[in-house]
Each structure stands twice: as structure tokens, then as C-alpha cells.
Image (cartoon, rainbow, N blue to C red; front, top):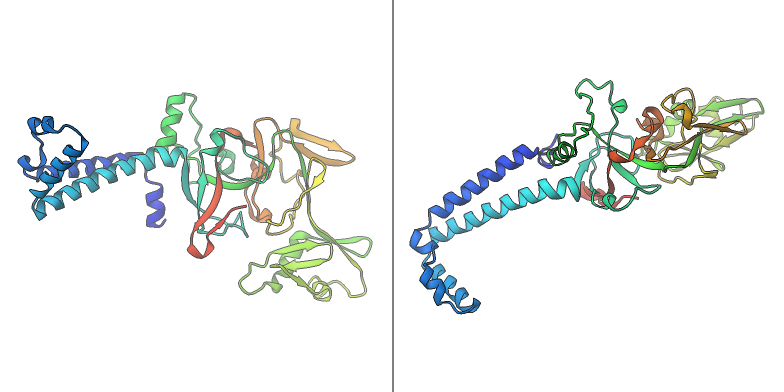
Length: 354
């Protein structure tokens, strides 16, 4: 973890310790200024009839300061301002207004890459609900990190005062995740995986397509494979159909038909330009046993999920490399902490997050 990340995640105890040290330094520097210079006599203040005369008195006092006195005064004021800023940022702004985060994994590629630093707006969700398509920061449910050896499961306390303290003190030890809202409360959602149909009876699944077509990875790209009805694209570049057949060991005399993956929400196929690749899994299916039985539906032979009230279906944009709600279940509204707004570092990647 970099120095910036350590500072951004400083505990409230350390913040208070630093603030106390700064206030103590302020008092020390202030005490080094001669008493007759830094203190106003009561009778001097009484003589001031208005703010203008009081300002002139302060100016007169300042003229008595030596260079050393002025330095001590400036240092005392700097420590005072810094202590106030520390308390304001870490006890008010960070827990309730905005917070900086960094991206530790590839689950939101290609839009967000590892080590991107971003700003999340935490204030807005006090007054409005998350919306479809929002990229949200949330505290991961314990099912998402149950196998982690360096984290203990955390259960939010029922006591509101204790929960408030956990918010400002970073006492909530659940890891922060970032995903996109794909299903709102009450939505009906399913995913059909991508594949290539060969001839009339055979098909090649997306996992094999991804593996074989990595050879067409572009310079500076990641080898992401997207299926479109007009062809196969790797890192945004269309690959010649004969090259695709050669890579997949398909005889040239056989016809191929491309079936892009589909995410269907309330009967409408989503347009998702932000994803890295077509999904190589259906959803729901036997790999996604996290769906409660009461949320499973079936219509015309197609299984789908109905998102419960107070819950959200969130997924990573890198669908084939993301631990998300497909695997650990719907996300509680209470766990959502903010919306990712923009990347601020590295400087060559500054942009608004859509």
C-alpha cells in the first residue's frame, strides 16, 4: 500500500492523535511569543470603538513582533489550521461526503484498471436511491470473503451509536467492493452466455473462444474477446472470419453463426458497451446457487431472477473475472456507501466514470 493509500485510510484513533499533537505544537509555539506582545490588555480593547480601531490595534501589536515571534505565530496558526482540517476531513468529509478509493483487482476492466484512484460521492445516497447503471462502492457481504484468511467476518451492530462509531472510525472491517448496478429492486434479470454455432449441430463455448483467441491480443490491449453478430472482436479490433476458424480449428467449409451474450432486464436486452467480454456463464444456473429459491422464476423455459425489495443485483464489467452478486447473492441497500464519480490518479487516466 502506498503512502497516499495509508493516509487516505488512516484510522480515527490516529487522526485524533495527530490532531492532539498539532494542537499541542500550536500551544508550544504560541507560548514562545512574549506575553506582552501576544496578549491584548482589557483596557486597550475597551478603547476600540469599532472594528476599524481593533484592526489598527492588531496591526500595532504585530509591529512589535520580531522575526522569530512572527515565525512562531505562523507556525502556531499553521498547526491550528492543520488540526482543524484533519478533524474535518477524517471525521466528517471521509465518512459522510466523499472518499478516495483505489482499484485492487481487474473486475471492473476495461473502464477501471488496477491501481486507478477514484473519488466516490457518499453524500448523495443519503437523499436518493442508487440507480440502474450506477457504479457503486459498497461493503462486501461476508459470503464474498468467507474464504479470506486475513479478514474476520463482520456483522453490523444493531446499536445505532455503535454503527455510527464504526462509520467514522473505519471499524467496519468488511472489504470495499466496486461493481455496477444491473438489477434494481423488483427487476427480472437473466443472462444468456455467448457462443459460436458451428454448422447446424455443434457449438463452441465462450470459455474456449476466449482461450483460443488470445493469440490476437492487440498491442497495449488485454486480449478481451467480444462477440457481435457481424464478427468477433479482440481488444476492439475485428478478426477475419477465416482467422477465427483457424484459431478454433473449424473447417473452412462449415458455416459459423455468432451468438453474443445477452443480459436481459425486464424483457429488454441491455446494450453494454462498458463490459470487457461476453459472459461465459448463463445466469442463473448451477454455478450460481446464491439465488434464494423464492427469487427464482421460470417463463417459457427460461429461468430468471426477481430482485427482492431492498436488494440490488451488482456485477463487475469484467464479467468473466469478477466476484459479484451472481456468486454471493443480492446486495443489501444498507451496504451501498457511495457512487464512483471520477478517476483522479494516475493523471493520464483522469476521467468521469460512466
